[in-house]
Length: 355
Image (cartoon, rainbow, N blue to C red; front, side, top):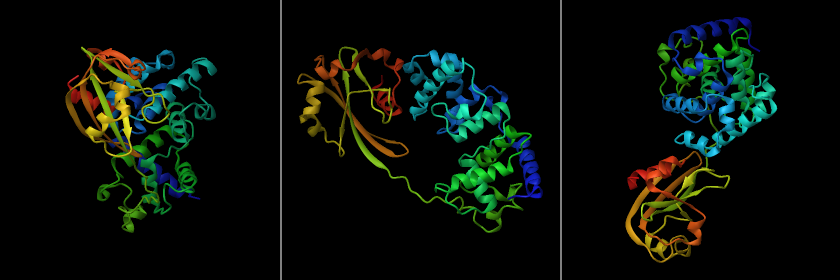
């Protein structure tokens, strides 16, 4: 248990640093829980610099819980396009509907009610409740894990079973109960700007005199991770059809990646596909039929996800044959294709096609 003699100087130093170094960000200028919620979900897998434009675009289109809840999911996905991890958009849409149905359109104010919303975990619930309502819940994200692991010299792997409780308890002890939201913002910001993952500027760190990692030359070692993410390789072959100015898109309906987004008719193969084998395959014939002409072959693009590496190539063909497989797709004008929400990978192929 930390003593007040340890906690008070830590809190004071932290807030002094934050006051002089913090970034001006729109979600820090409000106590609106909806705005804070949107920003937190966007920033889960996106850095602030990249996320700002998406945040403004999303909030402009969906300025309130009711606007989001009443929107069509295809529209929501379109405005989420480019951020990836589209399950977040689905969860937000469902949570907004839940707020309208169960909370009369008012964002809940109790931690347990916020935590119960679709797609909201411990961290996001703590962030919303502390930033919007100044409630005493410590936020522990990757930045805070790194800061605490180094400052206290903690060697417990941050991805281990025991680490979550250990770091959460420590963060809660350090929390400034009077200014919980400010303290949490400062902790996150310090990890993001000062105690960065690689080569932090420890000589100009306000905590260097009391940081165990700095004293014991462990800065580049901490925090510790014990698990390596297993990467799965996948191979996609896209069939990009030009049918007199029209093309075909199919909505992904499974619960895997890119659920609800549109893509070209796709053949997935167990290994890197060879064009001649694809053209002879039953799967290709079912989609295209026999009457087609090849415009050009589309070179491979590697698309990296957290647990998957996708190697995608394709073919640009001209045909006006409408097979049963194409009847299950949407036939759209090529000129209108940018009205549809597509994955970033499909977007890259659109660029190559000049569509």
